[in-house]
Image 1 (cartoon, rainbow over the protein chains, first blue to last red):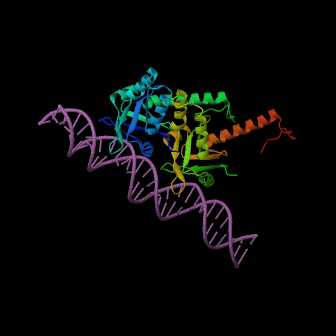
Image 2 (spheres, each protein chain N blue to C red; image 1 turned 30 degrees about the vertical axis):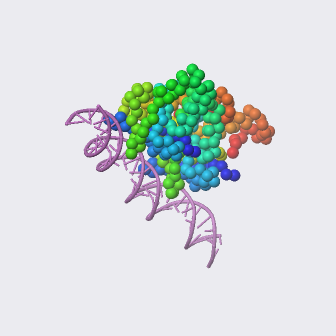
Image 3 (spheres, chains in turn orange, yellow, cyan, blue; image 1 turned 90 degrees about the vertical axis):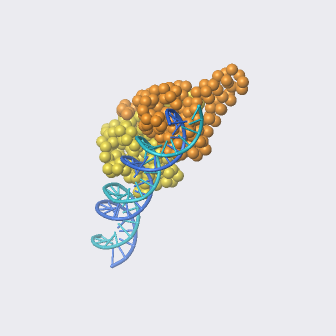
Length: 158
Length: 158
DNA sequence: TGGGCATTCATGGGCGTCAATGGAATCGCT
DNA sequence: AGCGATTCCATTGACGCCCATGAATGCCCA
């Protein structure tokens, strides 16, 4: 297991800096990525972040379109154009761009959320709502497949 | 037999630590997992815990969705985002996160419940109720299916 | 077979280290 | 020199690591 796991909430100081959680820094270091790759999510009001693993995944997606085609260039613009390469200071902090902070509706606090091959940055309140939605969706999906027999279908969940 | 079996109730000290039952530690050691993987159950107000076996099960489920799809990110958030990799100290203790303790309604005591390939962590009172419900349902199921001819259908089980 | 001994475990606490955070100092560019 | 941006240092709180205690269990031997 060497992906991004768990979630952490950190504060942004008045200079716009925020500490990247130490476990995530370790994953990035193992990944060999200097700093942090980051762009607004296409699906949520959050930021997608990662290192080489994420970049490779993006390129893999782009490879599905013929180079120099209009679609390819459009996608490239969407990904690369809106993304930035954040560098960490000696203490492992980064400064988000204003555009990114706006895109995610972030004030003076944010939540790092591990998603395995990448992680997301959320405004904490929005993430709380998002997580609930995610769990409901997961339960619905699993009920649909009926893969796992539930020993106690009547009892409440959290 | 090398799964998680039986249940144990331990106390949480004022530093938030709790001893993982020695038998469970041995199972994890045999599994080769350093520490303990843990996330809130989707069905109950409890925590699901385990080692490599549990992680592989999660990855297997996520693999059914293409990366970057909305569902994939949702599921990742529900699993990885809500989970944590707890490391044990020299005495085999772990510290639950506040979020996890809240999710399971845990105060200063908790119950480890072996489920074979994984185990759960419950607030002791809630688990007592859960176990009763489970037994009632088991009896009902057996009556309904009539799977094995029961010479004494009126008497209780176990 | 009963008592004593050794070991394992759960639990409590002290202490050093690291991470998160805040602020000062320095550098670079104009 | 002025201003923003980057680098460096200080504080504080959390966490990991270590040792002590005490209870319970299993083992050995008389």
